[in-house]
Amino acid sequence: MSQHEDPKPTPNTSGDGWRVLSYLIGGILVYGGIGFGLDRWLGTQFLLPVGIVLGAGLTIVLLNFRYR
Amino acid sequence: MSAGVSTEFISPGPQSFNTTPIIDGVDWFTKPVLVAALSVVVIVWFYWGASRKAAVVPSKLQFAGELGYNFVRNSIARDAIGSHDYMKYVPYLCGLFYFILLNNVAGTIPLIQFPTFSHIGWAYVAAIMSWVIYNAVGIKKKGLWGYFKHQTMPAGVPVWLMPLMIPIEFISNILVRPVSLSLRLFANMFAGHILLLVFVTGGDYMLRESGSIALGGVGIITLLMGLAIAGLELFVQCIQAYIFVVLTAQYIGSAIADEH
Image 1 (cartoon, rainbow over the protein chains, first blue to last red):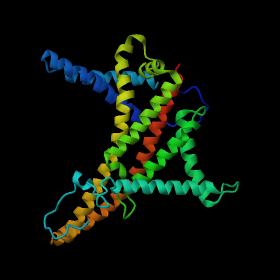
Image 2 (image 1 turned 60 degrees about the horizontal axis):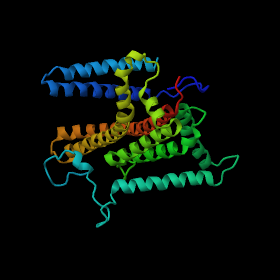
Image 3 (image 1 turned 90 degrees about the vertical axis):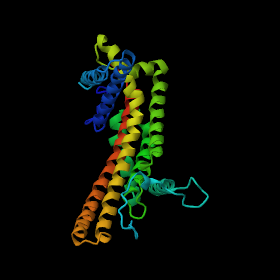
């Protein structure tokens, strides 16, 4: 959301929580998906959970930049 | 809702949503279609009646119409899109909001009692429409490449983190948004309706078919709790219509927002 353009008194933030959720799902999908693919490719088993955790962590970093 | 002569309780499930054609031979004309058509008639009638004799000193109907319109215009569209160019999207957002609201609340209205969006196709179409619109206005404003960059390069992230963030941003903005938009609406309507069915048919069965006084008492309590659930559902139905439209407005707002 842009905080600069309009002099609105109270921005409507009621959808922010849901947007954060879709970011989290996105991050987990991307990096969990990469982990899943690598697992398939390399025959390992630990990369899917690593990817999921990494994706969630990166998303939280991203959200930190975005909503600060 | 009665369990009939059968002595075994058949619990409601996804099969409870299998609607049959209302008129024999017209396969597409099912209950959700009827409810949606009715909702359109009611909305058109309401807003037409409210704006037909627009006066400086409004009639009761005009006042109600302005209240409903102003709600979407000011607290959804303007707050989420920004006071510069929100007016263009008010018609869509207003129509969408009242369409979803009425179709959700149809799950509570006696005799109708079917939330249209508990059939997932309706939710898909509503979400696809919003998806097409926010992408189209973004592309129109920034050009295809500019919009793509805008939607995939998160603001304020240091350059060395960018490669890690771009896929997250892309997937969540382009892929997860429409899916979550439709699933949230569908799942809330579906689950709410099934919950009500369980309470009402279960309570009814225990009260009338079980043949046990103790179970009958539990049945009465169950039915009373079903009433409370119905109240909760009414709340959820309104909230879901609101959140769907707020998110659509925010997506449009973020698609056309100027970064930096």
